[in-house]
Length: 612
Image 1: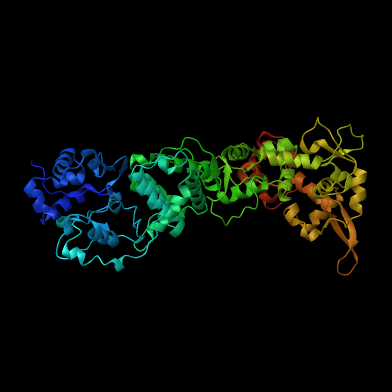
Image 2: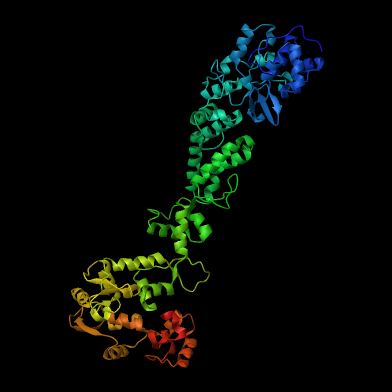
């Protein structure tokens, strides 16, 4: 191969393909004809093959090392340019864009034949650069009628191209700091120790700036036709240039935005779109560092745990949301939110918020759930409080205790109760009670009902309101039986209030299916007490039942069907078992299931264990 006698002046910012095109133009030949005649491997020059570049350097009398620095060299799927490497998608098709002002100056001030003077700049090939740094105009796309672009190469002096290079066509465009940064790195000026982007390959840095800018500007992860890409990249560059902290904060904000949505809409969040982009669109290993930052930010802000995968399985959980707790523990999100609010773990719970929006540190949620998942059943709760089944039901009716809505056992016969709630109730009732031995006249708060003529609700109200001045507790006794009060003090306070009464005709829901004549017989027998009060209409004396005696009667006696329901058995079967044990009804009824039995007598039997 003979060195060409007529060559062209190669510029420092000129790429290798432009050199070939200008050599052909200097001989007034078409690019493909010129390469075929001299045996130049045009594809090899475009791909940076070493042998093709050496032949071109020899023909053009150019230093091979300088020519390689101006060439796009393909290697392992990359296009390397000097010390930088980028992906093929980061380059425009050749010839792609140009500055009409630069071409006009090349024709006016260049050397050699007129057609060989315009040359292609390296920066025009990079998709991250969209404006000319000298003239601050937007780059134009070459449009040649009648000729295919791959035929003309970079012959910017063709007549057809000349007709479309009106300088007035180029819009004004500011040359941004980001574009200056890209061109500087391509020219070898880079590596600032305090710059986060300098630690990344150029194609990763550019793609990140474009991603961040698109999200901040348009609320989406990519730009569309008509968008100002230069402004988007500049915004992302200004955010990320100094350190990686803004990138992590950016990902954290996306995670917060995702958890504020409900489960159905998570697929439409920006966090999800960025995740998919990093997984599929930016799947090159060079983005692994970015994926790791995204993973860390997601773990720090989202309730992720074992079973989740964000660029790798999540091994440990940092947060629980109401939704993840529901999936793991089976407690409904709305009820769990209310329980957390009652416990003071969260404040101002709003059930209208999505279950993903309320998060709690994992260790706090686990501790809370364990306490709720290791509760008392009704038997243990009654044993702790030292009360019978009837008194326990009364505490529930007074809403001093509430069952959990969730049971860890399927089809559990009885609900479960928070052990902490049970203990808190007892501590609340004890209040400032003294532990010194109580006088002999003091009785527990269950016995004081008959001694002072008050209901359980009344005596509990006196305790919680701190109305009683003489309260003792006996550590040797359990639950409510350990709280001792003075009956005289209780009676004095209760007598000052309006009498707590139950009209005879309205006593049936409490006493059961008992005829009114039987109620008066029970009064005569001392099982119920009555008193005369002025009638609320005519003011005449009106004989009514005392509420405390009705309450005690209800606890001491129950109908057969109620006993069967408490013992989870059939009323007829229970009746036969009681007859076999010699237990007779306290008060018969034409309908056997409505007959009244003494609860204590049934509870003494083995079959009545649940009543104790």
